[in-house]
Length: 312
Image (cartoon, rainbow, N blue to C red; front, top):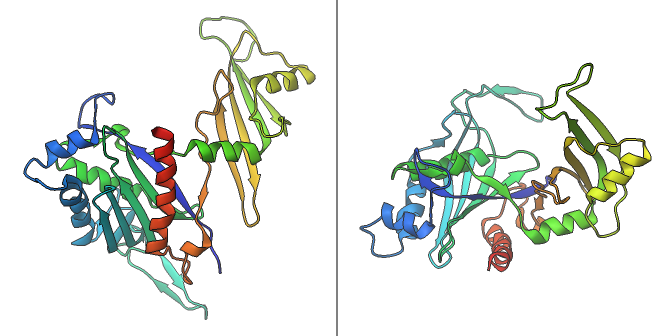
């Protein structure tokens, strides 16, 4: 049975523990501070090796004991400063059931790690970059991003550092976002109009929610605030001189799956938090529906090339 595999793209910035989120370090500066005695490639011999040690010598589990893994394969690329990992991992902390094709049931221990293989790449761009990247493969909506996140943070903790917000942050390329908006339809738009906090009125609701379904947009163009204002006016609504939030749900239908993404629109009508999925090519997936290590490396290489184009 075929499963759709996807890739999430995430960024992180490094800071000292217990300091402001604005006080971030360039990746090169972090490596110099953490590994002053390493004269060679500080990423290869330092941070990447630290992460391998964390997940290789014993099983690695998240702080809340909900996900765990053991390392199967790794590859460090010194020139690009990437670490590729293939692990056996998944859920732990639950007593689970395994039912075979004959209907026989086995019960696992809540200490067992139950799950398939997972691939991830951690990338420390060179130069003056202060942004690291995590590319994490997932099965449909099933992800162990928290495990990868905790692995990175654990590696930083050793030297008194952490990530901004103590997490990694989903992102995408501008090229993929534009393509998604171009090909998608608007399923619905939710407008929440709110009273000003300084306004006092009797017998009036604090806020009101309006739902507009299937707003048409111009071909190959994103939704604009003017489109929403016209649609509201056509239904007799007028919300000027009020504070309001707008969330638009975009829908894309592909051959073998449907994708919905909801984004908040800012004052200019631009989407602010829309992250389209990255479907992994079938050629990167083996007969057991597991990621193929070498093919995944090639797949993510193309993503890195696009990122470098957009940030240069």
